Structures are given as C-alpha cells and as structure tokens.
Amino acid sequence: MKSENLYGQTYGKTSFVSSAGTFERGIDQTPNVKFNTTMKNEFMQHDASRHETTAQIVGVNRGPEQYSKPVPPQDVMKFYGVDLKTTDDVVQQEALKRNAAAFFQQSADGDFSAPPPG
Image (cartoon, rainbow, N blue to C red; front, side):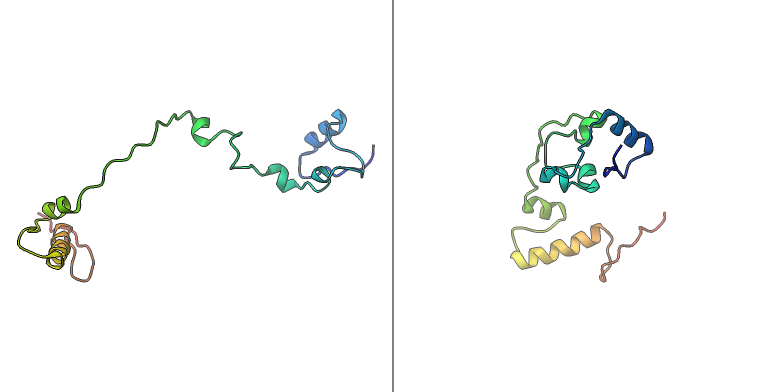
C-alpha cells in the first residue's frame, strides 16, 4: 500500500476508503482532484439548491409570503390625537412626537419610565 493524502478523518473511515479503493491514487490527477482541500470537501455550497434547507429538514412547509398594507400616516396621527385640520405639517409632527412620548411614558431625555404602581 502506498502513502496517499488521506487525512482529517477517523482511522475507520480512511481504512474503509483505502480498502474499497474509492479515492484517487497517484500524482497525475486532474486539477479539481489534485488541488482539492479538506475545507472544500466539508464546505456546503449554500447557493446551490441541491441541499435541504433547515425548514425541509425539520418539516416546516412555508406558504407564499404575504405582506400587509402599511398603516397610513394620517391614521397614526389620529391614533395619537393629532389635529389634522387646523395645523400644518411641522406642528403635526411635533404634536405626534409629544403625544407618542406621552403614550409610551417617555421622558424628555428619551428614557422610558415604568408606570407608577397602583
């Protein structure tokens, strides 16, 4: 038996491959065999579709992606109690910030405070 480049696997695996003769022997090899590395052998080509995804392995079947329509800014302002009829855009934005901070109990420096017990 000649010494070949079989490393990075257990003794049992290399012995089996050697006895079965399923590895390339000799020095005159094609470049894809000659310059193959252990990392290339273990690396999974993630952009190829030939391997199972994690969802397929665990049995999750996803349906088509569904997106909901975003909430219009006017509805957000109405929720926070901003008057849309009598004010301009700048005043509306400031009122939205102030009312949203009050809704989330946020102080002027940006910290959130817990609601008082009671």
